[in-house]
Amino acid sequence: EYIDDVVRNHNHTQNQTVTNTSISEYKQLLPDISNPLARAKCRIKTDWVNRELCSPFYTVLVRKEHNLRRSAYDKIVRNLKIFSRDLGETPGPYYFGNEVSMTDIALIPWAYRYPLLEHFRGSEFRIPDRDDPDSELSNFWTWRERMLLLPSVKSTLQDMDKLVTVYERYSRGDAKSKVGDAVRQGLQAHDIE
Image 1 (cartoon, helix red, strand yellow):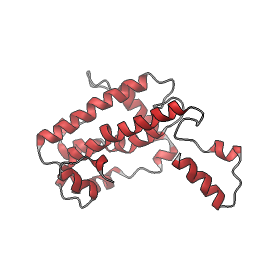
Image 2 (tube, rainbow, N blue to C red; image 1 turned 180 degrees about the vertical axis):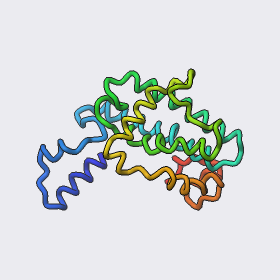
Image 3 (cartoon, rainbow, N blue to C red; image 1 turned 60 degrees about the vertical axis):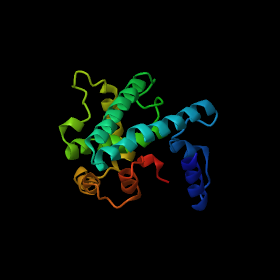
Image 4 (cartoon, rainbow, N blue to C red; image 1 turned 90 degrees about the vertical axis):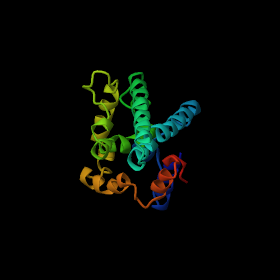
């Protein structure tokens, strides 16, 4: 809804008339307003992605205690299996079907960054790939590849070498950020306001 409002306000401030054509060119990230149940499900699943698939990333990187890192990593893998299974039940290539949704957008930056876990924490923190016999992540990897090919996603991705430089501070545990401070104190990244 916020993004829809931003587009409408941008068009208005640019002295453009918002027509059905200009709105239809913009891809909505929530299901159509005529389907409140689908919109609610999308919001709930997006929050789940944030809590269960994004926040634990920082716990793996920031925390010094191996058991906390491993628990956060296991949480990521366990929930990626759920995400992957859910993808197998959708009628299209994205989480809610044929159109990219807010849920897809919430996960893709972290799905792109997951290789950093292995880089900084070693092979025991590698996200299982589709060739691993017990991975159950085939749908996830197919989704990730598809998402990374989208021009709107490609244009926002940092070079992986730059990300290594940025996240090195987190892996050392000395990142000066609200997220780094909170995770060092035992909070979750999604608890930050």
